Image 1 (cartoon, rainbow, N blue to C red):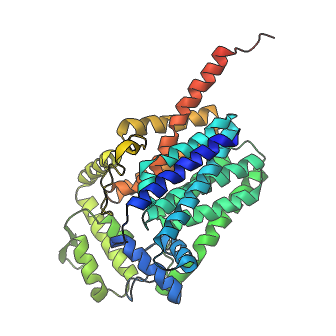
Image 2: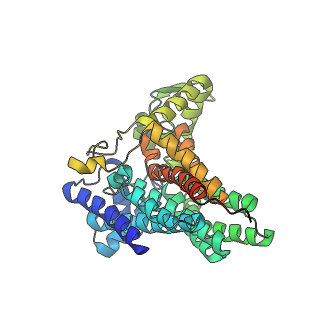
Image 3: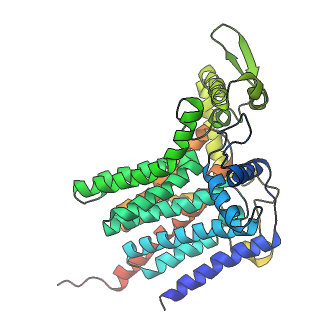
Length: 413
């Protein structure tokens, strides 16, 4: 009987995704097409370049995972991609739900976690696409679940696997680098075990991340003479939605450029894409230094819109109501009130169940808030929305504990 809720939740998870895929199709375009192009280059020539100039413009996580899928099932096999991507999310959610359930001492919690993610509209929406959102969501679940497993079992091997998952997460989206640092900090400060065991777990976690990240760092060092931890689009991302900015050079000359201007002239003006990336960063700092209060207002505007905005640029399909009929009343999507309830629920869950579960709300903040310093797009928050929805269970656990104590008060022995 204990498996029945899991089976039902798994059925909902896959039924909603397959139903969405069967009625919608969208070939990669824009950023998604760029990632696919690099994935094909990896399959054909083990080449990570976008072209002869933009050699490290995109982070390698999505192209590498995509290359593995397309090599196994055929280039352009998007159904295989959708199944693999959703399987990563499914596995991560099952493991995370089990870890929370074991700590809560409530069998229903784990299947409820899977059910909530299965009904999460952003998770379903991005599961169709060759984009970083689904991979980011899946490897976040995996890295956190494996780390919690390592803590519970007091074993370093799950910690090493957590590091591998976190490494893939970080080279998919560089803003996710906060996750392994949060896990290491919580292990060091809040895990009530001998110091040697804490340090060993942190070390194995770090080795896992380093094994995934090291080949990319070595490659960029070979190309540019300096290690590049993420990609060479960072400077342009900082400058993405700032409009035109005027930069005063050291020789007294002034140049006014937009992000598109810099991208267009970079191949003929600079030695390589890393130098172009550094030049683009100068425009960003010029914008900030000219009026810091204007930049602060822009960041606050991004935070507000990130919490309320549903539209995204990287789609030809509606991001709002993705289902018609009765199904659209079953799926959940973001609203400021729901996000506030979910975030506070994650904190309550950590206080009620295990303080180390604070990694969930801290992970959400650590991934999303730094991106508000970079650009305005709700895409940065979308992979973390299902995590916040899970927080509703924190309030459910609070009510469940209160009911148990009220219905069955402890004896006065």
